[in-house]
Figure 1 (cartoon, rainbow, N blue to C red):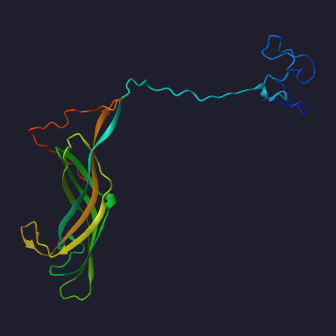
Figure 2: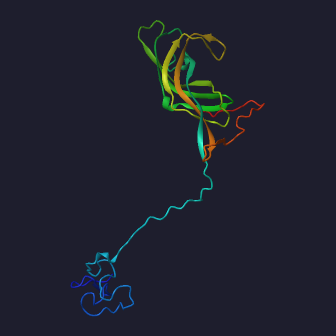
Figure 3: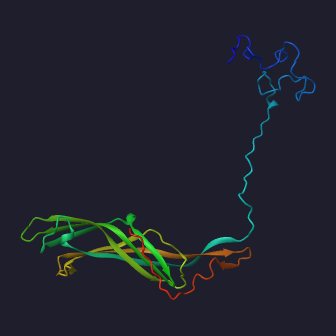
Length: 259
């Protein structure tokens, strides 16, 4: 870096940013009459470098670059989702659990005092498929079940818990729905929670016992079926797949992913 003198801050070991004439010390040897700067306007070579009062010497007009499309559009048609229909439905999740499923194990013959069921709606997993005129929905809802009971001969209540998931399924008639349509379904909401002790349960060995508890949860949601269609500039509509509703002789078979 050059050392600047105390007398002239624009004068360095390599010379001045302005000519001698700019500092009032002679003719400007760097600019002739063919310069883009007028010979008599000394300090318009750069903004404020030569103590010019003419702040209009540098007029920078920055413009944002024009947005370039990847490719020009060659059609005035648009692709939209047409609503086939919308329907409010209920789903029921339920399962029966023997006393042996809880921790600690509830002794056989115990008296059930209360059953608290806490579902996790945010953790629901569901799989939806569309058949001709029908929507099939299968899923699981996680729950924590806490049972307060009195063991045989005991007067002191004890508790046992079970963390598991309840399966639910629903087959909804939906006239006009076709495979390849799409389903829009908002989050499930709870409508009711029920527990029923003493329900018969068939164990793995085929033994039937009433030392079991049935848990049921009623869920509510809305199913909306949509279909992609093309709309032209005159309002004409045509299906993206005109053969989506053709029937087949082979029934739909689908293995849904595990939660």
